[in-house]
Length: 103
Image (spheres, rainbow, N blue to C red):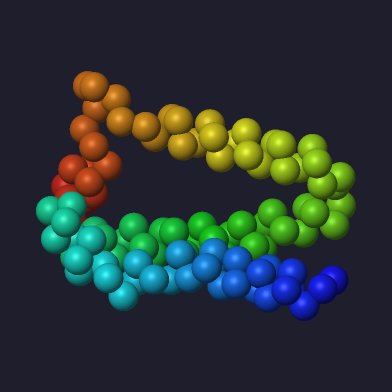
């Protein structure tokens, strides 16, 4: 691989991992913006980090055992299904309202 490609891949990995950890530093601002308790905002950040770790431990090894293209298609399909199932519904309370009721 060429040096510019390696630098681009390193930058991409840094930004991707940074997106998991940056919200931890600004969770009080997230809580204020969503009008939830700081504990609820911290819980959301923690859940994202636990999900990231679970993905590394559970999904990455599948790349060594399964063909890459069907695995990527299946994971993107599952991600799309999960995101669309959590999309706001007209008669459903928002996630932030649920989170504030948990705290």
